[in-house]
Structures are given as structure tokens and as C-alpha cells.
Length: 413
Ligand code: GCU
Image (cartoon, rainbow, N blue to C red):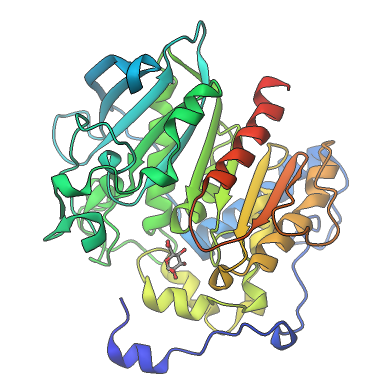
């Protein structure tokens, strides 16, 4: 991560609310020409494209159009997975249309008793699909991974010991029992999470090993793009209702789920779990992780233009409430954890709140919460939010809320 020199220079994070600077947020409902947006049509035609372009060029970087010939290969099907509860499938997506790199593996569970295509949650994971399940016969991921002894990673590769090590974050049986499917993808299949000058992963297919221009895709954009390609596959899968896909992600992958949902309106519901800086948290608050710190620690996540705003958050033409506004009118859920101050829970809440006027303009129930709700007291309208007790993680409490929220929007209950 940070070199010792960079670490020494790293500004101390602020955790004191009284030290949060005064700031004025850009208004999602005023165009770059200073015109007030007062109809859904003006939002869709003028302001939304403007904001989308600003996030593309100044924050995450533009992604290319989908490849022309992707190849989908079903590599395994198990009709009695999870003791008979689920059908389990593994599918490899070959981005170039040839059976070679780059490729990503999808691990899919759907309820065995479903009589029609089901709504699904789709999410990226940090260490391979084999880590999210206790079933020992799924493919062990063979791509590069970040070092992590606790996850059974040896020399940047997964070992048998890594199976099931993230299963607490993915309550598959509960998801299946509630009538949903789950689609899992290892983020590093799309783009390995390290700063390699963008030679590897999906970047290699497009950039002929050149570093992207300052407004072209970093790793978060690459991951988001990969989620859209997975959705391309889901549209062809008869077990899945591709009009009801909830994209969910934690932390860096929560930043990614928001950006994927913002760009691709086919995602019907978007969930950010503890996404923090560059995700749901407002950059201008400079609380916990800042634009400065994140760009130094993870130079490959954002596009190079984002460096312009290091210690100059007020110059940003956007802030993260506008990322949420791009998802409108689709349901969006942001979750925080009380002890995850690095991710700035209040800043995550405020992004939802300040995106609400767009949701209201588009005729939805919006958010409703004026003040930060109490701990473990979720708010769920068209926009949802909770702050739960505990640390930076994905817990059963989080999933319980996501399932309830999805019930409201997908099942009408
Ligand atoms: C680091 C990083 C965060 C990120 C987190 C994660 O803490 O600073 O921005 O969200 O890793 O992905 O777990």
C-alpha cells in the first residue's frame, strides 16, 4: 500500500465533527449553465447526462463499449446444491469471445423450487467465489489475489484453506429461503486489485498495455463494467429475472456497486455496504478517509483526473450525493456501521439525503429521513439507509435489511 515515505506524510484522519469544514455542495438540480431543473424530462435529457459525464471524466474514468463477441460457457450445474435447496451453476465469461484471458467466473445459486425466473442479488467478492460458500466442490479461483494469510492466500493465489473464509458475508441459504438467487464474481477476475500501470485484467484487452488517459477507466470503473457484462449474461439465463437484479457491494466493492448502478440503468436496485470515501460518503466533509489518502493508497482505483481534487474537494464539480442521484428513480440502499468511522457514516447518510430532491422530482417516495436515524433503526422508502452497531463488515443484520428492501420493491410485499 503506502510507501513508508508516503505514510509519514499521510494527513491524520479527522474524526471530530466540530472540525468538519464548512462547505457548499453542488446542486444536483441546477445545470452547469445555472438553470434550475424542474421536470423529470429536463433531468433525464440535460442534467443527468451532465453529472454522469463529470463522474466519468473527473472521478472514476470512462469505460469502453461492451465487447462484440463475448462467450458464455456453463462449466458446472448442480441441481441439488445446499442440501437440495438450490440449483448451483458456474459460468465463465470470456470477454474476447475466445477461450483465453481475460475471463471471469460467475457462481450462481437459485432456489430449486422456483417456478419462474427469480430476482437476484449480484455482488463482487474480494478473494474468489470459493470463499463465499461452504460447498467444497466449486472451482478454486486461479487468478492473482492480494496477500492475506487469514484467507488462505499463498503467493497471491488461493489455496484449499481459503474455501468458505468469507461465507459469513454471504448468507446464501437465507437468500435462497427468501426466494432470491445470488450471483458471485471475484473482482480480480475483471481487474486485479493492484497498481500495475493497467497492464492486466480487462484493461489489457482494450488498452494494448497502454496506461489509460487521465479521464479513462481506473479499477473501480473496470469492476463496474464487469458487473454490467455479468448482467449481459444474466439476460440470457432462463432461471433469472434480469429485470430484477440488485447489485450489492461492500467497501471498495460498494463504491463499485454504486458506480455500476449509476451507469447501467438495467440494475434495478443498488446497495452500498460501508462504501465510504469515493462511494457514498461526501468528499467535502473530509471525515475519516479523504480524497488525498485514497488516491495515495490506491492510485489505480480512480482515474488520474481525480488527483486534481486532493485537498481541493471544493473544486470538485460533483460530490457523492450526485452519484446516488444518478440511480434515481431506482431504489437505492446505503448502509453504514457505527465503528466504521473511516467510512464516515454521517457523510454516507447525508449523500442519500441530498440526493432525495432528485428522487422526489422523479415522483418517488424519496427518503423521508431528515436526521440521521438511530443505530439499528433502518429507514426504507424508495431510498434506504441504516447504521448498525459494529465494525466495517457485512453482517446478517445488513442482509436482513437488504432482503426486506428487495421484498418491498421486487415482490410488492
Ligand atoms: C481501505 C480503503 C477504503 C476501502 C476499504 C475496503 O480501508 O481505505 O476506501 O473501502 O479498504 O475496501 O475494505
